[in-house]
Image (cartoon, rainbow, N blue to C red):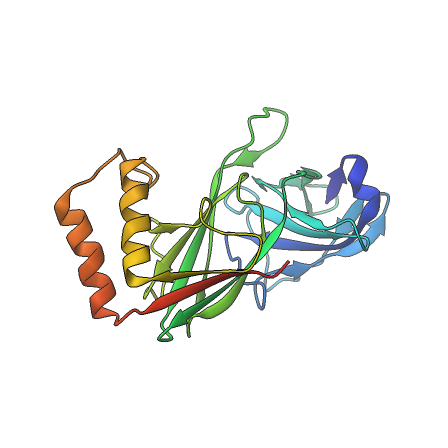
Length: 232
């Protein structure tokens, strides 16, 4: 894997996210520094993949004091001579990096979607992707977010991510200083605002049935509050 760009020489750690599995505890694959802005990993026979079907993105940490970043999603090209997959990424966006810790009261399953737009560059095999993960007990960290380069949706009370069901958009509400606390009324209001602005991956909508369903769902979950804390 080749990582291009002036900042590639400052890379300290590089992790591979494969096929949308964004779980930083179990899903991120640590890569080996092969020098000259090349990073490698032998996935072995058990984790072999199709370069036609699979896609990837990166999470990177720079040398101390230089922060980190994430990349867009891309497909690999097969090298038939070496029987390896090759990917080239540009590195990296200067958009502020955040790790967001999520905590719900009471504890409940929480899933999230990271919708990453396609990079408009015909020279690379870039695609739009939706990376996902779940916090089974309602507490967890969404790592290496860059909230203007991607859209992060939180799905409360959802033990398995539902890609077709948009929910609470974090882009506009995460704060850098302190912890944002959202009560049941606060979540309902944010969802209403998102619908009015057409940020639910659908046309603008302020229908009463949609709002009623939001309220009913939160009541059934016995939802009290969610805390969103920027920890990096």
